[in-house]
Amino acid sequence: MSGFIFGVDLDGVCADYSEGFRDFVAAERGVNPETLPLERSWDFREWGLDEAEFGRLHHKAVSESRMLRHLPVIEGAADALWRLSDAGVWIRIITHRLYVNWSHEAAVSDTVAWLDEARIPYRDICFLGAKPQVEAHVYIDDAEHNITALRRAGNDVIVFDQPYNRGLKGPRADTWDQVEEYVLELASGHGWLQPQLPGIDSGADRLLRKKTSSSQDDG
Image (cartoon, rainbow, N blue to C red; front, side):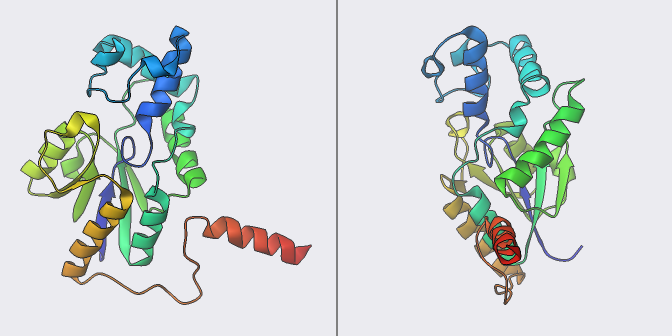
């Protein structure tokens, strides 16, 4: 495959898993979501969850409440990824959402639906946990174990800032504008950038605007 490949994680990078899962857990417990801090550890110890209880609640959130279809989009992700895609970067979604057995159909279908609704561009998508097995020129992730494994295999990885990964060395991005800048710099070094194609609108809502315009013309 030709082109500069950007391996993009979803939860904690494009999708705000912490906020979505917090709302679900709060509803299950009948408590105010504010009692569950977003400044949390990877294992949710601040929420009083052990591994078994997290697995139970995550499974219920995915299979019954269809949480993965309704997660908030992290600010700036869609627009930055569209600009990168327009510049010739191959967006490869890499996510470990097949975490719990017996909810795979919901996880896969809701992930694809969420990507469409969030207007996230991508060329292909991989559902797996062993991310070093996937080819990309640079990755972005929030999970310490993924970042460590990817770097150990010799990969460039951007750390998307979250409370549970602040012990890791950079490059680190607090915003998607910073992510875009770093990826463009790397892609430029590989000679893979292209100018915005003529006649192509910019912005993540381009398809909606095109559809609206067509409907108005038909009317």
